[in-house]
Length: 76
Image (tube, rainbow, N blue to C red; front, side):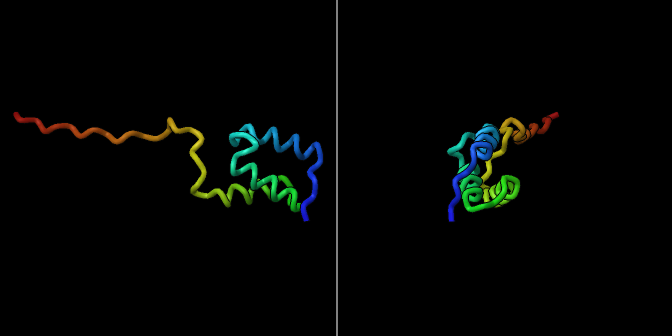
């Protein structure tokens, strides 16, 4: 049975959504659904992170290293 979230729960979700791309992100939709089913914020967060798994985008795309260029052999 779905329960309506309290104002404080919604405020906490909205604040948290800033770290996850807004309320319409997959993570936030999953969290909201689980909380409406009675799960706590912390447990819903852990479960949403687990469920995202490999689908999660890296937060810092700049950290990816580029392949090194091969040096040409010297002809001397």
